[in-house]
Image (cartoon, rainbow, N blue to C red; front, side):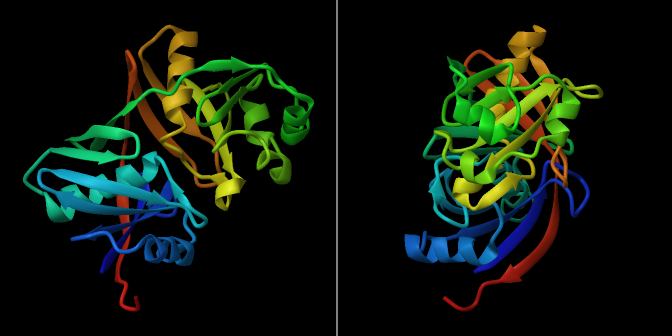
Amino acid sequence: MKQYIVDAFTDKVFSGNPAAVCVLDNFPSEDIMQSIATENNLSETAFVVKENERYHIRWFTPKSEIDFCGHATLATAFVLFNYYAPDTDTLNLYGQIGEFTVHKRDDLIRMKFPAYKLEHIEITDMMIEALGTIPLAAYKDRDILFVLRDEDEVRDLKPDMELISKLDGACVAVTAKGRDYDCVSRVFAPRYGMNEDPVTGSTHCMIAPYWSRRLNKPDITAFQASKRTGILYCECIGDKVIISGKAILFSINDIVSL
């Protein structure tokens, strides 16, 4: 089995968000996929199988399977476009979030996903203690999104990861208006084995619609201010979000011991 390591949402290695991608004829057992993801110890390992004209994709964190991952989808599309389907510029995929399409346009890969809802929730004392600051607002879907005062507060935040893991969200994101980009964010997911996720495509299905409404513009350029950093180009169209980014190959290796 060949495994590709791809840095997503960047055009330079050692930045963006690394994901492992395994392209298979058939899915192995869930135990094997989970063991591979745990051994990789990256935020996500994607497994993809071609079924007729579509690609079935599954995403695993070091701890468990997850319903959706944006950066590992970008990494998977990069691998498919470059090594398995070089003559096409469109891929049809499906996973737990349903069917979605991915397009290649010049050096960008464009992924069309369902937008997350923005259900306003009350800010609790536990949230304040977990973040170490009082957010301006909080929203909930699969993830929790906190709006902070400015970019510096996002960059300087030192949350309590034990308390973050107890909040009722798969990921916990903080965001603010950016100086050089429309918005900046950071994303934490300790319950899935990663304190801070470097660049998170899925959570921008929530972040981008928030800033699109707030700034009254459909196109949002987002910067994730993790140590590795990454840039996401987002378009909000009705109940969909197109998230685009670049990717670069880090390595190809063989998994031989199964």
